[in-house]
Image (cartoon, rainbow, N blue to C red; front, side, top):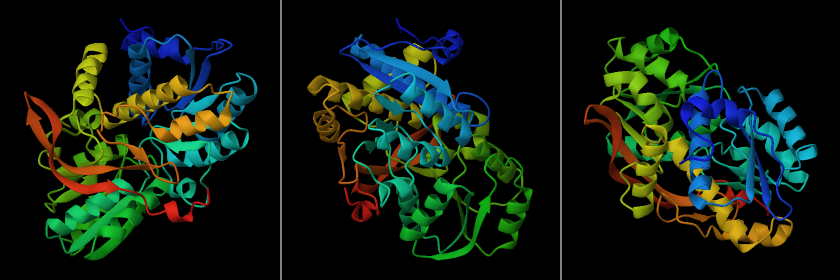
Length: 380
């Protein structure tokens, strides 16, 4: 039985969580988005993380969870409180890159560890890297680089590309352009949280593009795909998993069928750890896991693996234990590069209907043992 989570009662219980770590234990501060636009992403990271802790049976890891409301100023206030008043040892949970950029540098400078289960801005992968910062998901550009490579393989010559105007959006289009060898007919940045894409779709219609690449996570992607499907524009779409992941597909509906998207994880990855994770997540929460849930799960298991080797009070030993990444990832092989970002395989997935449910299946390997483009700028 889950110690902390059944979906109805979980939100209230976890948001109110404020506990004190045992003398020889570890205290985690989770700052994530649990309300408003994009809350499904934070809920999935939280649920994956807590599932791993529950399965570990450990009683020496305590978690304080708070909602950042997708606002940088709120995230900073929470982080300051967690570090200075709650005395957390490790922080995690942030979904959005603008929040990560606001929070992470201060946290690690104060001697705390930050484990990112999602946001991977280029600013923190290159010159802004830090020995106490580990990204367990990806560097922002990675999935988009794979999408650019897939667009080449699909024979696309002219891409219309768009993303929100915030750090991850700029990283996304940079990543796509780094690998796409064709022509970019237009590069458009939308407002973060935008829901009306009539103007952008009109631009696509008027362009001479043969394909569309977009990065619009959460509700933004749902709105865009619904409007695009109803517009009559029939250019093929390519995107990262963020716009076609499990928590989004049901809302998008059949307009997503057949769309190819890129991801470092999929529920059909053929390894025992992933199969067990998918089954146990469904049993615990009554829904299929998403990319975000898998990242939360891996982040918790990395943390557990480090605590098995070293006490967090021994900063150097604990850092080395994290760097070793001695845990069984649901992705299969996993290792950190020199800037503490993953070196991993990235896949092309296709949206399908399976037993009446929209989901993804892997169709090819896009990039093997892929590292990010900013590691050489990290002087760590």
